[in-house]
Image: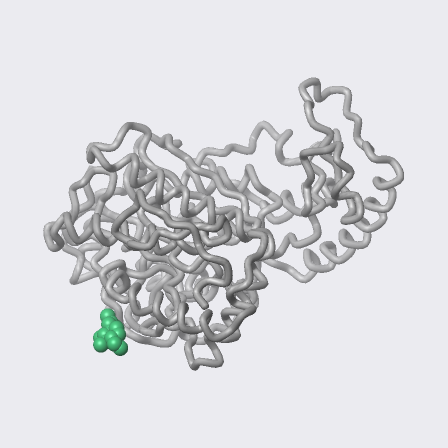
Length: 461
Ligand SMILES: *[C@@H]1O[C@H](CO)[C@@H](O)[C@H](O)[C@H]1NC(C)=O
């Protein structure tokens, strides 16, 4: 099914998000406390494991090839192990004590809701203390595309580049990533396909605090920017949008559901049950379509869709849902490509100017430490009076090619195909330049994807 013409037409008003101050019901204090206890445990365990380098020689794992083990910094160059896990998590330890994985009642399927997930997750974490450090900031990025080849001859190539961009971002920031390309619930196609994947990802990655869904046609155009997770500590779902448009305008485009961050917790399980309950696998699908059309005057197609469903849940579930939802409008948590691609040239010039004026920003460095150079650039941007808001000269965080349909090629008739493809090339190469830089190369022309030139030393002095 092709998304209807009016799908995802975004407005780009400037607005502050509503202030929210209710405490989160998911992330309890006891979890934080257990986290602290785990750090202590981990410390003991790490000390112990450096005495005994292979603490879990589990005989039942017959196919282990590498001796992956927790190591301390001084052990890094011992020359024997190619596999080193710098984050300290023990990837070979799964004790025999039973967890939710051993419960035959627990289902990965979207149709069978999981109950008491917070306790189950905590229990698993208790048995895997090496994952305690950094647990509250751990993010799993989830994305995906259709199971069959793209109709657009360029489509699969474009999807590969969009995926490469996400892999680059995750590698730089130490996030895991999962690409799905099968419909886990066959009836939940197009924009509904993500919910079964997000639910399964929650069960597959209990160590992750956040699941971050990013549509296949969205890309990172600021490789340095990190999610301000601290800002979302009282919330369980983050999407790009504005509460005042939800409540005052009752518009189904008052937010965008193509990129969202959802906390790995029971609230989210319940929310997704309600959210996905308006989807095509539900016996009430047609009725939900009618309800959405009645509720949103600007929605011009009859089928129930996930974005209208999200706005509807916010409108009708203030305490139950909306209080735990953060609509991010301060920076491009995701941004509409037509607002963005025309600004990339001036943004590039601004960064070149800042780098030209500060030698530390031009210093070559290992990709692994690029976060510290991102923080440095942030400092100089601030000094130049440039924040991360929209309509500034900072790099937009995520650019979303809504309406361009790279895979099917059935782009919205509002744009010419040319502007979609040119826009994607520009944005992809703009992002790639931030990555290639640490490999010593640059695309001199954002519209020529094949050409790179070596970066001179101390560039762009
Ligand atoms: C880029 O900068 C130039 C010169 O400052 C300005 O005239 C132009 O409007 C800017 N373009 C955009 C898209 O902001």
